Image (cartoon, rainbow, N blue to C red; front, top):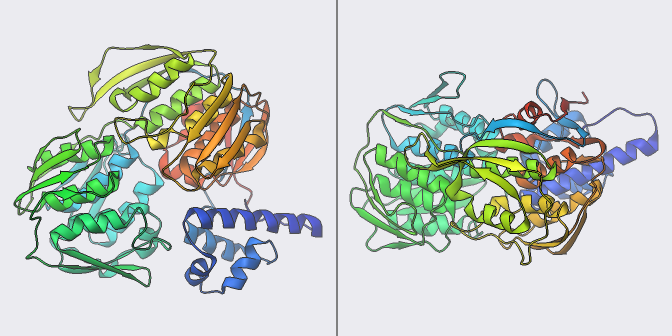
Length: 518
């Protein structure tokens, strides 16, 4: 949503209300209270309250400042896509390659801090989350450069990391900054890292990190928007580390801490998800001994110092593969999706087969990392029936939590009722109800469950992009199947997780135009 001049007082009030709602949704998604957002903006809570209710005049500068604080492109001036205009219904055709994993790329950027030598990563997803991490790394003295049009990336660390000039603004715009703790605890005895507002110690996504890293002597206090970290060099894992949560980033942090611990570390209840496996394969290239890859018990024998020139290619992204698969299903299209990491989509495909999806599958071949199994999938237009049981995520090898939202738009084109149970996130299911604005029948049963009734005949509408990545893409995919013209506004969140998604869908026959208001 951008500010557009208007002379009609009623129109002006409507714009302010719409901007206020967008700001409120983005604030809630970031886990901030009104008071915390006010602190970030050096204003009062009452002012934030007035803004969110649409009772406050806003300058473009203020809207941009709010967008930066909330990591949401509420207004954009200059180059780059801001909104998407979609003309449908679309029938896709042709073939497309799945790009490398966003989440693996982010983890490997953090892990490059373990290595004093040169790291070359192949075909890195060139997305906003990666760009923010590169800005942070460069502010620490790390030299990074894109080598070619294939998105190969070179990373050369300095002899000594300097955190005094860390790019705090970039750090606060990435949720991945917490994964610097594992590598840095071996490089520095005390340091500070910025963290995004609302990310308080004790929350689900933070406390397990602190519990795991405490075994390596790390103590962290959070005050004034900073992690204050101190390391006791005399402390090391005296027994197996049992993670209190089988989280991906928690496991990655523990792995990176173990990589520079010269003894043997056992990590139990570890995630075995795709990005964790890529990190393990990278650590092996660094000379770290990692056993149990693909299981929930990892045994790591680290090295006191790592200084090697290493070349690594992360595998393809199963979430992007699922996005493309959902695009083919909802548009009733026949396309070939190449380089699909099949071992991380098997439950999703089994669920879709039970719903009636018809597709062809190639023989398996190996990804460039030398480990991950890939296939090519060719979809066929299919009449789907709603699954008999609810669709819910589980840790790998279960259905991936990030793939669950795609079953909302798939369920919308199936016959019958599909129930989705997102037990992990408090509010993400709410954003799926935006499908109703395109003609879908989606009922929110509680903050974790939605009921989708199909089949749906989608119709074009104008929507503001939800501030959550996967639901935002779900809305875009529904627009591909919608009759008429749809507009999806403020799409920065999609660019955080997908590289050129609209352009790549256009190559398959979609009609998506990028534009901005000012």
